[in-house]
Amino acid sequence: MKVLILYDSVFGNTEKIAMAMQRAIAPKHTVTAVRVGSFTTGMLDDLDLLVVGSPTRAFRPTKAVVSLLKGLSSDALAQGIHTAAFDTRVSVEEVNSKLLSAMVRLFGYAAQPIDKQLTRCKGTPIAQPTWFFVEDKEGPLRAGEEERAAAWIGQLVDRLPMV
Image 1 (cartoon, helix red, strand yellow):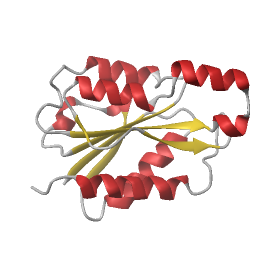
Image 2 (cartoon, rainbow, N blue to C red):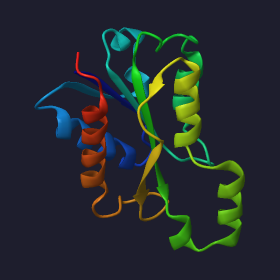
Image 3 (cartoon, rainbow, N blue to C red):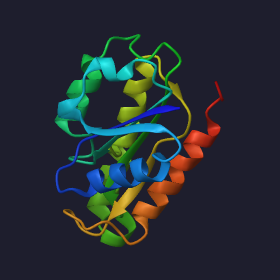
Image 4 (cartoon, helix red, strand yellow):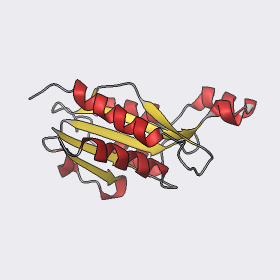
């Protein structure tokens, strides 16, 4: 199984999630975790699973993630690549801000638009977009989130058809 975890990170939290995912499945699968700035389209060759993650910045993925995904052709993932999206975010419930809650209801988080773009490129979604919590705007990650990320990617890989 060949897996690519493509991510961007501002304060290092999303990178930690991507690296936890890589460590979790590396012993059994060919897995690469790479920051979006180092991505090349050749990385999609013979790929089984593409996981893309971003911190939520102004209710969206980072500009680098948006630019990369919009730059992919509309059939870039059509050769049977399964996809999944994730983001890192603060918990609106814990922040307890009515304004922030209203803004989130209006604009959402980073994972949903990532998932939409992956589908636009003819990727096959294998899971609903997910998220991992940071304690504050800049982090750190909430305790247990790296372990949750490792379990999540394990579940994704288990869903893939065996070839």
